[in-house]
Amino acid sequence: MCRYCSALSRLRWRDSVVPGDAGSPGEQLQQVAARTDAVLDRIQPLLKDGNVALVAHGHLQRVLTARWLGLDASAGRLFRHPGPGTLSVLGTEHGRPVISAWNVL
Image (cartoon, rainbow, N blue to C red; front, side, top):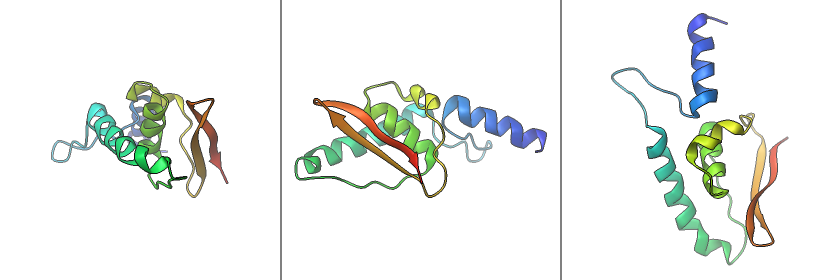
C-alpha cells in the first residue's frame, strides 16, 4: 500500500470522514452529524408503523449509528467499518437504542 493510501486509511478510521483536497474539502464531522440527525428525525414518525430501511456508505453509517445511540458523532470511529454488501441493524431494547446486528453478510 502506498504511503498516501496508508495515511488516508488512518484518517478515515480516526475521524470517520474522508477529507478531500483544497478544492473539495468534503464535510466536517459535525456537518455529517447534522445530516444524520436530520435523517433520524425524519424516520422517527415512520418507525411507529414498522421498520425503515436506510442505505448508506460505511463512514456515514458509522456516524448514523453513533447518533442513533445518542453518542457524539466522533464515536463513529469506535465501530468497525462495515464491509461492502453487509447488513447492520439498529433497533431498540427496553425503549433504548441498540445495535441489533453489525456488518453481517
